[in-house]
Length: 531
Image 1 (cartoon, rainbow, N blue to C red):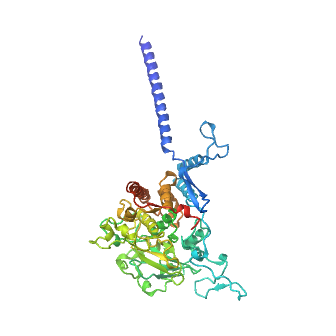
Image 2 (image 1 turned 90 degrees about the horizontal axis):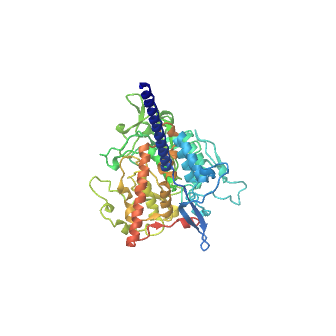
Image 3 (image 1 turned 120 degrees about the horizontal axis):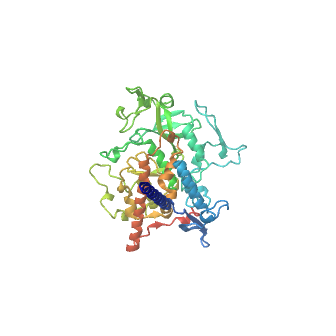
């Protein structure tokens, strides 16, 4: 009797165990299905251009809509044995890559972004008058092609340049591609050579650049190219002290580098190329400088590091010295624009300039309708100057740059040209706090380019997420091998601020539909061919 009871108990236990295992497997299967559905990104959007038969300009159609499926090779199968389209294949590839290396996924997103029609829109050929510089043609009286031969100078190469672009160094080719509308084209086959020069070429001269509140040097290369040098003053993880005013902040070398990459991702191409580089402050600055005032500021710190501070208005003293470790110093090098004797630039005071006072407010901070007056004031009353300025405002808000008191343009092009986005060293100071006042011009004027608006919407999608493509773009910089140029909190802040910007545009569009105010969107997409 006892034996039978034990056998029955054992059977019941085994049955209960089998039932428990079955329910656990069922629960795991349901959870996995829900997880896969939640993680699937939406199908990428696309944009096509068609010529309008009347004006022969390119008009955007099917913007941010689903692309028609195109079948890949029959060997790739989806659910039910159906072949996968190219977007599903790309999505699966990204998911597999993300399991192996998150950076690989970001790099794929960056490539997909630059392959998007918004970044490869067709444009007609730029006319000669739209180029900033040009090589003079061969004169009839000359027997041979024009040739520029360098004078003999110690450390510099003996170069021979003629009218052929193949004979020009990368920096000169860059200068010759500057146009009325942008600093460089997309894609730019010369960009890799420019970046390599800034990152690796031997430095033959280093002198301090006059003006400004902080230390800056002008570096020269053997092929006569020059770059603006800004040293590392803060670690990448350091946030700006909340008790400091914006005009008391230090400039950051990684901010200059990140601004170049962000400007290119936004499709502006208005920041000169900037590269990170580690320099030897003794061999590449102290020993080769001809600037005696700069040379006299070098000293050794108590721990044996070589330091210097230069001469400038505010932050050039032993208390604000920059130091190597012991001689190695990180810095940003930005390619210098053409000399002012060749291409003069005009400086414009920003209408939304801050008061730079601890107690006073600027006019735009107290008058909600301030932009109404600006819209009636030259040069913002016609052309693209106002939407050009809003482009710069969006860039500054995304990277939290409050120090935009002036901007510059090339005088040759008058008011019909782009704005140069220079001097971005005070950006990326805080990631934990956004500065809504930077976005005030957009909120007050309610005006934005259609191409800018579409790119911002594109960058808000998961397959082109701004933080991911920035991470990928910055990974190409030489200093990424030391440490990421922007920390993850700064990258996350970009996504947050992008949403804030799009929300501001949405409020403007809502206001337009309710109150009948001026058009919010400036339609430049249909005019791309006419640029």
